[in-house]
Image (cartoon, rainbow, N blue to C red; front, side, top):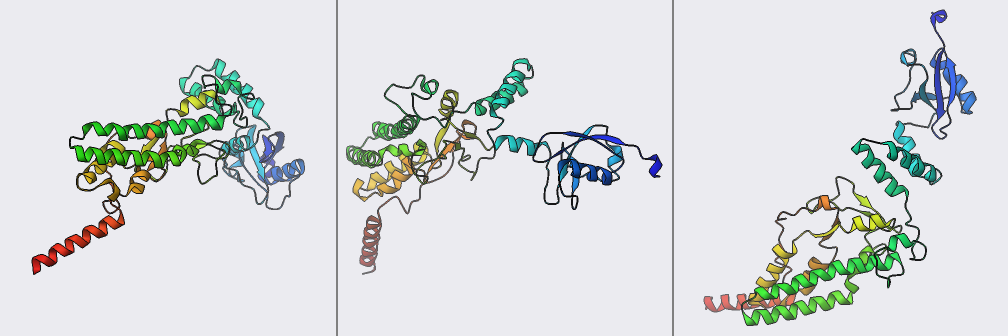
Amino acid sequence: MAALLKYKPVKIRSCKVDRKYGVAAKDVKELLKKGCKLLQLPLYGAHVCLYSDGTKVTEEFFPTLPDNTELVLLSREETWSGVICDIGQLLSTDRHGDGLIEAAKSLLYDEQSPKRRKILTDLLLNLEDRSELESREDDEDWFQGVDARFKTKSAYMKFNCESRIRGYVKEVDHATRSIQKAKVKAEYVKTSKCLAEMLKAARYNGCYFDRTEKERDRLCTQEGWFTCQGTFDQDVCQSLHSINPYGSRESRIVFSTWNLDHRIEKKRTIIPALLQALENHKSTELNLNYFYRLLFTRDNLKLVHIVCHKKGAHNLSCDTKKILRIASNSKKGHHEAKGKKKRLM
């Protein structure tokens, strides 16, 4: 039987180094012996698998392999999941960054497939990342179209967030026009002003987009990466959307399409609940902290990719137990109990 075995040429490499070596062997046992000597790995526990998908190469499988199949030689504790392992190693180091950028540009130049062009374009967008640069002086391209008063990326991103949340104040104010009763309108104006003052004191929560803020206050990593928090009815983004607007001008512009989405909706639910409460209560009786959190904070806001921004009705309601201040609820309960006592008498 041994005389029938033929030497099979294969390409072998380790999981840590991508350099390949040509080896010819009659079986896996001989391949392991030669490979371990060549790659300086311990023979005990060594095993070999396909580079493409990590399938283990057995003695029975080995003869069926095409000549020059690429294999990975692993020590006892090492594993290989296929080509994805190489991608992971490339992404975990900047050592091949420049080479990857040039290779991607070259491939993109000759590529005709729209799908592959999209993949290469997205790859280039993330590879040509300059998020480590912060000042206008260091990354002038990022600041194209940005007002000259902003000298750092973080300052502009903070302003960007403030502007979005200031817009919610305007929407709250705009509801005043729909109020017919003078007393209700007066109380609503007071409420609106109080909410605006609370938000102003919190600096319009611009910290959410500012990577220089403390971790508990920002929505991004220290490097500036934002992760989509998923649709209003999901705990996480199923598509794993992420973006670093600090990395490039294009990413900054694309980030403007991301939304701070109200789980309990602002126009459909929160503002109407506020108006309804003021029909029978003064502004001083309302739990303004509750409405403030719903309108302007992460308690009710989710940062979402445009695809994860559902425009339909969310069908979520305000908590009726939190609309009024505790003192007001207690007072209301006291009056109800008093009225009940009178009826009994």
